[in-house]
Length: 323
Image 1 (cartoon, rainbow, N blue to C red):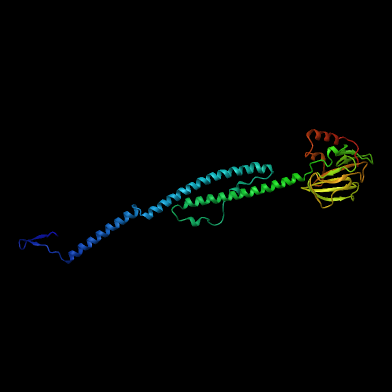
Image 2: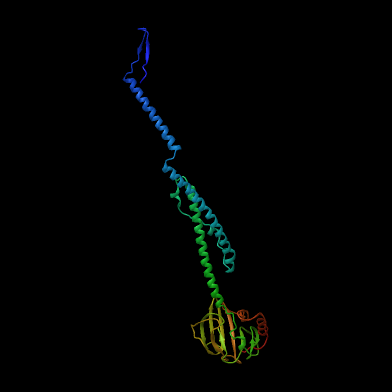
């Protein structure tokens, strides 16, 4: 029950009852509504800023979990960077040294990505910098891994070429020791058997019975097998690639034909005394880039150190050549 209020009327010298009109009722109603609205706004502000809704709580948990996952991802990126750095160091300072290749410049390994802003779509979020930095690190690591994989492919190619080179280089005697009578003449100044004058002998002469097998000293392709070269008689020339060629002269017969590919140790012909020759022997030469080299330097494939020294001693004697 509402309280009844009175006021003192000095004219009548009495208390009169206060009558509440429509205007008063309207003011009271407006005051009530304004107070309710103010309280509602205050509650909404407090609830919006200090009290999370269930959806907001779920989203906040997901955000914290995302931050944790990004932190773990960056730790793994640190570990991968360390592993990749070790691989790059081995590549530059071990593998490429073995194959006499230049190391990959750091500017190539660490190169970034040019062009427009790659991470523009990642901007405008609360954690944009974290996301962008992680994306940059992933891209940079991917680029370094690509460069390293290309480097390993180059090393594989170099290893295969190195193997082919080792197989191609002449590295055995064309006539085995067990078939030799003697090392007739070596590389250097010798007495010409026909003119008796000193003449430079550009190969090695191996004395053995007619018909003794002659072997290819390295992998290659037969480019000549004929007797159309003055003085050499029946002879074979093999192109081993990489600038190497070998010549086998004064043969009795052939076991290969022009254009045929041969392997080291394969019988290519038989020793004889054709052409400008004073007796059964094989004249053998090694060429590199059109320069005639001492064949003695290429017998590392089958001779022991003792046999090699003996062969050097015999081939260096200043005697008369067979051709």
